Length: 124
Image (tube, rainbow, N blue to C red):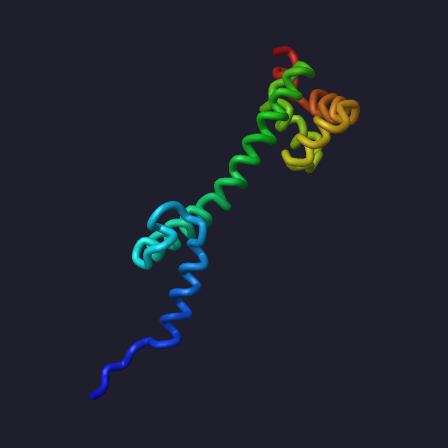
């Protein structure tokens, strides 16, 4: 029985992998075995960091809101609680943009959140 090889399919696979590692440092961008490992590692990092980016942006929006709320004399947690009690359904991204671009409108939102605080929270 004759020996079978991958032939054109293998060459196509190698071209695809080597094209993917073009520009990598050192032997990683030149040698087949290291290139295969680098492609897998790059894919893992890309997948992980796509999800991590969402988490980092949410943290940034919360940090901005915290600073904006402190400037107006209310804690971030009380602000969010007041928004829920008032029935205002704006997410943190939109609230952060409002706080930066139009502080007057954000002042009105903060006032509404302050009005809907429980009695014990207003005294504190």
